[in-house]
Structure formats: structure tokens, C-alpha cells
Image (cartoon, rainbow over all chains, first blue to last red; front, side, top):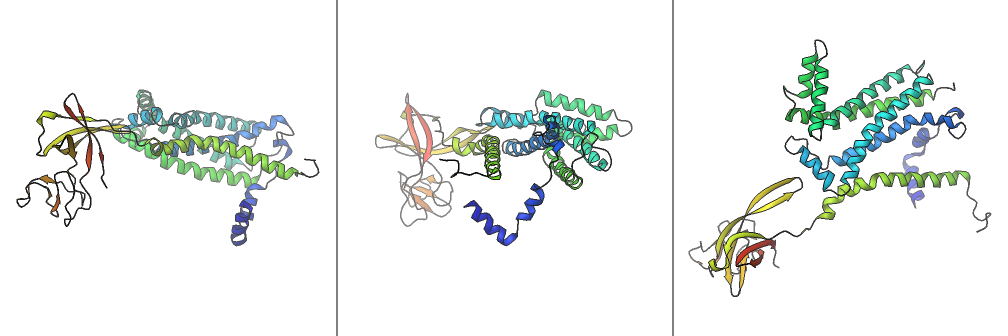
Length: 223
Length: 167
């Protein structure tokens, strides 16, 4: 049945080369854990992406219940955590996944560093990777404020004070990020917008570039 | 079940196992999310509580009287109070409470405001008329009787529940 549907579409649109290009590629022996078990370190990049996919999916579902408003934000999080069936699980996935994505990204960075994979001709991919690192950190920072509880509020107070400590542009940066003089209604709306629209957009763009380059250049050689 | 009859190529075996494991992981990931999204539809239909309207059975007469009362609305993380109205009266042995919302286009009906038909509910918008028990009078715009509240009398006090449609 599925095969027939696929054939019907393929006959008209010739989709086979599309996914073949993506799916068919050499996996050299030195990155295949079946040959050398230590090659599992090459999995960390994929694991990072896997957790990012979980973050995007669980985040999409969380916004069905969350409202970025200082009166109702905490109540809506409390409601989805305690009243909605499996809300605790989905929020838990987003909460723990946020930490896990940092861990995986860090391990991936270590692997790239110690295998020297950042060297010519792959310098650009390292640069994009570092940009991805900043985007993920910013996602963590903006997401932390959204539950609007004590921990969220004071973590943001500290974070914005750190930004303010920057020379010359410090105060400007703080007011820009807070959306005003205090951390309040405008900060929450702004952080929400950045967390769910701007940063994920940047993340997907950079990930596309990251994957395009690794496919174009291939995996770096053995040590 | 000999091995010869069920030759499975390496490629096929890998396709099956990888699809199976991948599908299992995807399902495990998506199941809680989908259940969470479906929650309002699956949890709906909870019975509404009866609310006191601050009126005792003794205060009722055959003449419908309008009562305003507040209902607590529980809307997810937002609780609010909504004012509702009912026309309450004694109808034979039972107590009847009618919704004042006209079944034509939702205006508010009043008792006895039409001088020609003083013993009827009258809707000023399109001159819809209802008898005392809420039955719509043929030839006027409404197509069904006024909705009724579920009524309960506890210790002589009137409590109203959810609104039910008739016909």
C-alpha cells in the first residue's frame, strides 16, 4: 500500500534522488562504532540535533497552554504542569532537554576540538558551530524567564546586570533586552518573542549551513 | 517456517529494525505531546455545579420574576464570575427557571412587556413571543421554546444548574 503511494508520487515528481542525496553517503570506518567502539564520540553532533528536535516539538506543544503575560504566565505554567494530562511530561522534556542540549553540544565541541576537525578546510563550520553555541545559550537564557517565578525573575536580574557591566554599551544593552527600565511586562513579552520566533529561526538557518558544510566537505579523516 | 522460505535480505532486515526502532522512539516522543494537546477535548463535559440564586421557594409565585445571579467560570488558569439571569416561577407543583435568551437571535426576553399580550414573554427585537412555560408561539420568529435551567430545591432555597435546550 505504502509502496504504491510512494511509486505513484515518485512517478510524477521523481522524489527518489531528493532523499537519496541526503541518505546515501559514506560512513568511513573510523567514525563507525561497529568497527571501533570509541567512534561513538562521533555521535554527539547527531545527539545534539536529536535533542534540538525534541525541544522544538515540545516547545510547540507548550505554547498551546502558555501565555507570556505577567499576570497569567505563572498560573498558565502551573495549570499545564499540574492539571493537563501529560503536561508534566512535556514540560519535563523541555526543561531537562534544555540542559541536555548544552551537555551534548559541549561534548560535540570537545570531539571536534580533540580530533582537530576544525582545521582547514573546515574553519567556517567551526565558526558556524560557535554561532550555534551562542544561539543555544540565548535560547536557554530567554526560556528561563518564561515561567515567571522567583528563580526565573532573579536569574534574569542577574543576567541583565552582567550585560550592563559591558563597557560603553552596557546600559543600552540592558534597556534593550529588558524593553524598559524594569524587568516586567515588556521584558516577558520580548523574551517570549525572542525565545519562540527569532532564535529558533536563527537556529534553523545556522543548522542548515552546518549540515550543508559537513555534507559538502565530508567527515574529517582519522587521527 | 524453514529458513529457506523466509529469506530476509540484510537490507530488508535493517529496514525493518531501523523503521521499528525509529517508529518506537518517535511514538514515545510524540505520545505525551499529542495527549497534552488533546486534553481539552478528552476532559470536557464535566458536570456544572448548582448555584444558589438567593431566593427561597416561598418567595416564588406563578408570576415569573427575573433573578440575576453569578456563576463561577473555571477557564483553565483563569477564574472569573459571570452574571446570568433566569425567569423563575412556580409552574404547577414544580419550580421552573427559564433562560431569558430568545431562541431566535439571542436578544433578552421580558415578561409581560407587550401590552397586547401581558401574560407572555416578549422579545423586543423581532416581537418574538413565548407562553409562560417558555413554549414559542407559532407565527412569531422563535423556532423553539426558551431554554430551561436544571432546578434543585435544597432546604427551601432555589439552586440552578446547567441550561438545557428543549426540542
